[in-house]
Image 1 (cartoon, each protein chain N blue to C red):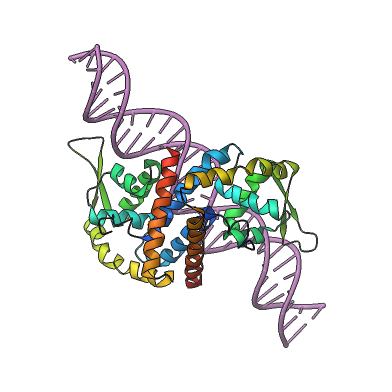
Image 2 (image 1 turned 90 degrees about the vertical axis):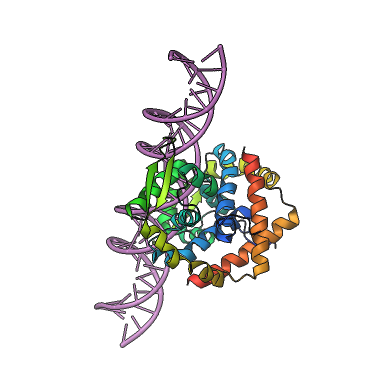
Length: 145
Length: 145
DNA sequence: CTGTTTTTGGTTGTGCACAACTAAATTGTG
DNA sequence: CACAATTTAGTTGTGCACAACCAAAAACAG
């Protein structure tokens, strides 16, 4: 293990590299849908929770309005969603799918299987990786606050 | 496990979130050194391999010149390094630390321990996470080419 | 009800990532 | 040697991330 480079010995770098490698695998698949990877994550949420507010999306994705506002604006001008001020609380902006946005779900349904094929990990390994990462993220986030 | 949200069930999102959470823990520590996280990675490499070329740095970091060129320019104007065309092959740009850049290594030496404290994983878990991530990244990268 | 505080979303500015392209230097081939 | 192909850095343009700041709406306190 000591022959690994200075970078590869650090978990942070492995994460950083793995995350970008995963995004690179998604890129060509999502390009067919006209989405970037963060846009795809937003759509995943909206397909399950149409009408979520910007704050709720940000909570799930751990992204602030400085990232989400322009991203949502791009999805809006692509005709996939609409933003409407909530009538009962005008601070909130509810994000609603258009028919086109909702329809995209069918096409996107094929994506996860294609990714899984590329990952080269067993289902059990995926489960374990996922849960270790979740604990790691939680520990780090607790430390920042 | 099925009560996890649509996002948290996907390894790709766990990676994406974990990577950003890790960067967020580094940020205040690196700010004292005047570095961003990707800049810190470049400095880690240079502290071990002063004079590496842009191509070599990009190979290790999996970053292309579109990312590295401006990043190196910022480190250069911060007085931490210099870029010199290699006399034997003028296509290559060798990146050399300045005295200030080399000296920063002492200050940076404290960073990894502070991060480890925040991670909340045992040494064995870190080792396993790291090796699973490396295999995952390799599998994904093989699939892209 | 009035003034303050909090919540919510937005804007601006900086720094990655990465695709697409360019230019210069080197290498390979007939 | 001539000249095509390759290697190496750099530039430009788009889209995240995130800090710092702002404005409007709502909730709260006296």
